[in-house]
Length: 103
Image (cartoon, rainbow, N blue to C red):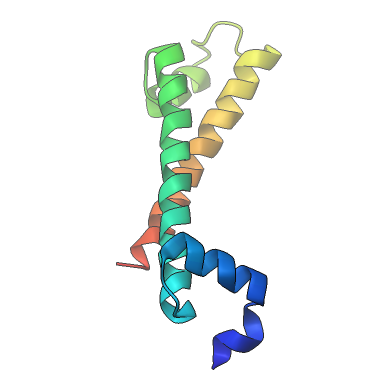
């Protein structure tokens, strides 16, 4: 079997314990789906935190940023928020695309 040469015994034990599935060809996709779901939730939670902080969604924030309407936009905290927020939006998009491969 292909998985016997690729998945080590410790990894196999973790996969089967996490998924309650003994067949690696079933356990691995189950574990990946769960990881994608968790990462997607994290990306959405990060975005929500910024939306609550600034009171607008990222698209509106980016538009205001580009129009120089964000106070202290070149301060380290605001600039860091912009980059982290943009990363969360990008992460959500990429994770959503990856998740569709399992549907």
